[in-house]
Structures are given as C-alpha cells and as structure tokens.
Length: 317
Ligand SMILES: *Cc1c(COP(=O)(O)O)cnc(C)c1O
Image (cartoon, rainbow, N blue to C red; front, side):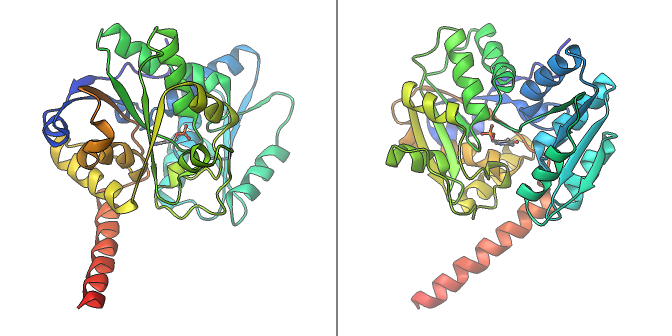
C-alpha cells in the first residue's frame, strides 16, 4: 500500500462556469499531509526504508517537511526536520504533531539546509523537496489515476516551484501515452523562475523570492524541469499574489476547500486567465493543496492588498 491516497477527480461547476469550458479538479489537497508532496516523498521514503535507511532528514519547513514527517510516522522511522527561524509556528507545530524531531537553525533556509547536511550519517536518507527522480516517479501517479478514470484533458494546469510536480506530471503524461497534452505552468510574480528561464533560454536563478507563495519559492527550477519544459509543450503563466489569494478565497466559497496561494496560482488561471485556456475545451487543474495557509491568513493578505489598492486610488485622485 502506498503512503498517498488515490484522490477524487471531479468536474467543477463553479470553475467551469468561470473559465467557460470544462474544468476538472484533481483534489490532492485531500492527501493526509495536505499536499501532493506525499506521492513522491512517500515513494522515496519507502525505497529508502527498503534499502535499510534508519532515519529521514529534511530541511523543508513547508509541505515537503510535513510529508517526510508523515511518511516517517507511517513507516515507524524517525525523522529530523531542520528549519530556519523564519518558519511559522503553524508549520513547526504540524511537523512536531507527526512525531518528528524539529531543529530550528539559522536565519535562512540555506543555513538550515547546511545543518541538515552536516547531520547526515550512513544510515540516514536526505529527502529533497523537488529534485529527485524518485519524487517525480511518485508524483506521476497523479496522472496514472486520471488515465485510469479515462478522462483525457486537453491541457493540465499546475503550479511550479522547484519543478518537482511538473517533472512528475510530465512523466505521468508520457507513461500514459499522453505526451501530446500541454502543461500550463502557473507561477506567482516574484517566484517565476520557470517563466523567466523559458523567456531567456537559460535556467536562471532569481535574486530573491518576493512572492507570498512560499511553496513556489525556489530561486531556480531543477535541471530536469528546465530540460522537460523545452521538450514537452509548456505554456508559462505568471499571476499576481493578489490574484492567487483571491483565487484561494473564491475556491473556499465555491468548494469549501482551503488551499495556499501556491495552489491559488493554478486556480487563478481558471478563474481569471481564460486567454491562457483559449485553445482547450477540457482542462485539468491540479489542486496541489498546502497546509501552511489558514482562513485568517488569507483575510490578512486580502486586507494588505485592499490597503495597497486604496493607496493607489488616492494617488490617482
Ligand atoms: C511544493 C509545492 C508546490 C511546488 O512544487 P514543486 O515540485 O516545488 O514545483 C506547489 N504547491 C504546493 C502546495 C506545494 O506544496
């Protein structure tokens, strides 16, 4: 039995109406640790356990770290997650609630990651949040489930951070004979490493992440993501943080499901970027999930955007 669930695939009436075409949702927000990450991380952790590893180490304070903590608990293997001081109380609590050991170290992620690397012993496995072929193989099961339902989309909308989900979905499309299905790759402004790389033809690194969609906050996509983006039909779309947050709020009302802005980026394509979908009748949106946002946090972000908008209005007057 894999550690992930087979998630519902539903046709969304509200999103279909908004996008003026059929919109299917793959609800990976319903995975027990809150995101699709458990597909790949679960598969990788099982492989490491079989290979005799005795401990899992992660340096992600986000959905990847939570997925590693969950996988370790399910497999009865101890987990250490090293996070920087910037990691929210909520994320820390979720990691600890799975029984993982939490180590807080450093002002930024690279310091936490260096600490995690220095802790690695022979019997330890390090779990990368996106750059690992085992992860992609596991993420590909998302498309296997869509293929098993015999619902072939004309395009797949998904969010891109470091590109692990993208690599897995392309692998899934290929292994099901759907290599002709394009991917619409959504990013937020300020976390748009893939869109900028495709525009320049080089795998660029952003100077800084300025988006609130922290789960998309990889400064550079992994090599495999960039390579696949040049082989597979891909259309990058960049949405504002505000559009991503608005999509989360609308999705909460429409489907009673709370997701974080990283996922809202994909939903924003269906809600507000009909032009990106113009060529497609049947669109699959990967609802990648996320556990770090709360209804209260969405309201606070919305308040900030409203204030900024009012200031712009005043400036115009
Ligand atoms: C990790 C994550 C992403 C981005 O996935 P990558 O594999 O890094 O591209 C998007 N949304 C959510 C909710 C995530 O947890």
